[in-house]
Amino acid sequence: MVYFSDYFNLDEQLLEDYGAFNISLINDLPLFIDPFLLFGSNKNEYQKLHSDIIKYLTFLKNKSKTGSLSNANIKSWYKFSEVKQNWFGYSLVGNGGSGLGKKFGKAMSANMHIVYDDLNNEKVTVSSHLEKAGLFQIGVGKDNISDFTCNLIKGYIAEYTEKFALKHLESQQVKVIMVDKIYFDYTLEKWMPKQFTLPFINGDFVFLTPKDLLTKDDNWINSNDLRGNFESICTAVPNDQLRSEIHNYFRSKIPPKPKKKRPSQKELTFAINETIKQFPEILKYYIKLKEENKVGAKHISQEKVEEVENIFIKNVSTLIGELIKQTKFYQINPKGSFKEALERVEFLKDVIENKDGYRLFYSKGKAIKREADLQIIYRLTWHATPFDVNREVNNGRGPVDYTVSNGSKDKTLVEFKLASNSKLKMNLKNQVGVYEAANNTSKSIKVIMYFDLVELAKVNNILKELELENNPSIVLIDACNNKPSGSNVK
Image 1 (cartoon, rainbow, N blue to C red):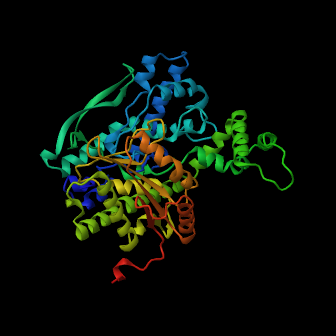
Image 2 (image 1 turned 60 degrees about the vertical axis):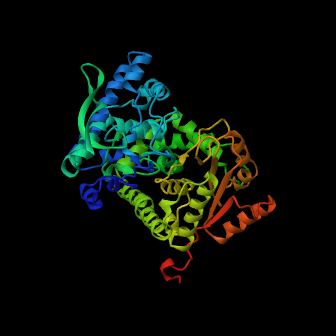
């Protein structure tokens, strides 16, 4: 069992018809709620959620005008635990996350008057947007925006889940839960709890999330997009004088170069950041452009959610089915951690190379080269095991992808790398040994996946140079998409 439909013995179509994402209850999937999808929706309930967020930002801004907030205020108004029960995020093991703490609260509260200078008095944009905070260099990133959004609409998510649970789940599958921080009482100036009947499994409740609120990688309004399209955004500023001043200032921040030599990315990033500081209204024109393309936001979001569904649900379900059918994969008796971890890598390799599993890593014919995808898929194959499978803590030397252990004396590290990774050689030469020493083990497995023959040649050259060609702890996986279909291989 991996997905919500498995654990609660439901037809997947019920979730599809309800509009909910069929989450994994083994591991977070790389999705999050984009607040712009509330603003851009035609649904009244989503529009209200967007208005509620703006109302809360207004409260925070008004409080920030009174001076520096106390630690108690920051804790009460800005500090939230991660909503781990929706099983979304960037955790490679389980569904844990750090949530929003004092650092986020101080960064936001100290900059409310700058970030939301025209809150409720917008002249360029239609509305203010929570994710605007992520455009400034103030230490508020997309993970913070995602966690904040999810907490601010947690009441809606709880009601949405409860409605589904009461209609489709058995009484033994649900539990009445008092959920904290569901709505904000503006009279008491305090977040309040509320009781819900929710799906309950493995000692915790579960939230379902509408698919049309989800996206992957970046919010529709995001810093990477702003900086990647900076010059074209500035060109769209309608005021001729302001536009000219922006362009002149931007060029003045780029060091002079010999003819035909382009500035480095570092130099461009510096110039962009300095220009935004000098002309913060650029952000308003950028947001205006994003507001004008609501349809694009919905379309991109839908594509990204479908990509995650294809990779982590449909394709992984097929993978698990193959492993069960052909190898009795989940009935393997406990063995040493190295042998058990290596067997699972070899099974994964066989499915990817010989049973069309390489399709896990392609979307619309294009390779999706993300080490995190391979890591999550590997983790999903461990759901029925007596072994402890975890992403190890940093130890000051950098985290490993996974540790597989059976007691403190039997531990194996598993590292996943793409052949295209520019630091592959350094990792094979130095880092794995450092990780082993930091984790008190001498056993590790290195898995390298390649997508074409050029990448394979690169890996082979590195292994030869490091005298690791025949090392049994190094496993190469061929994810090239020019294989004959597995169904046609006799």
